[in-house]
Image 1 (spheres, rainbow, N blue to C red):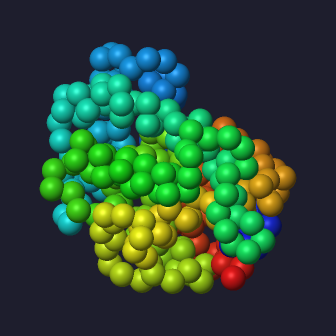
Image 2 (cartoon, rainbow, N blue to C red):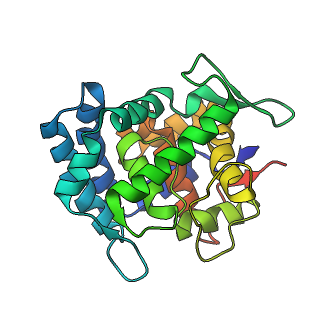
Amino acid sequence: MLQLIGQTTDIKSAINAFNASYHADYAHVRKISSRYLAADVSTERAGELAEALYAALANWGACTRKAPILRTTRQIATALSCKALHSRFVCLDRIGLDALNLDPAGGRNFTRETPFSSLNQFDTELLSILEALAHALFINNTNVTYPMKALLLITGFMPAFDSQVRKGLQRAGISGFSGTQYLLPKNAYRAAGQRICHLPFSLGQCWRDNKALLTEAILQSNYPELSTEPGRIFDIILFMQRSPQRRLILSAG
């Protein structure tokens, strides 16, 4: 379980101090992805999202040294035009973190009806989507970082495990994030896959337990539109917690 220890002013400060260009990239892509997700897939909307994704991911480090190379916007648009992949994005976008929960013993569960018949099905689907994004958007990508960034930009579902967020998780007291890279896991049975699949449930509970405080901090910040984007808020909180001067969230067990 995760415990929020930052107060309203701490969270507000972290949001405002986060890189303004990253805020702008996210807002721009999410505006376009909302149109893409709200209707049946079309070539026009897929192309528009591909252009926005390419620009944002390049700004976030893709195509630089040690980062994966992006496919062309035409190739990305073709992938995004796939009805099956579009439906999978819609599913995660509509579920959101507030549908995910931990019970007092730390067991995962859903707070309402979802398209998933079991936790195993959820795990398989999440990792499968990340693998699909790795192949659809990038060339020879083996790490989870950029597929998770793409998923965050398209759906806002959960934080991306870049080096800064992993440092924030490490400082929260969660083990397994001290390495220099995080490879795409093949399944949820090993530790790497379990961490990806379990984190949304921990964040879902943390959001519900602290929704009033977090919402107040977000609405007081320069980015009040993020009050409906819990996945992005935790991405920012964990990213900013990489700094020893910020203690915002901790593992409660």
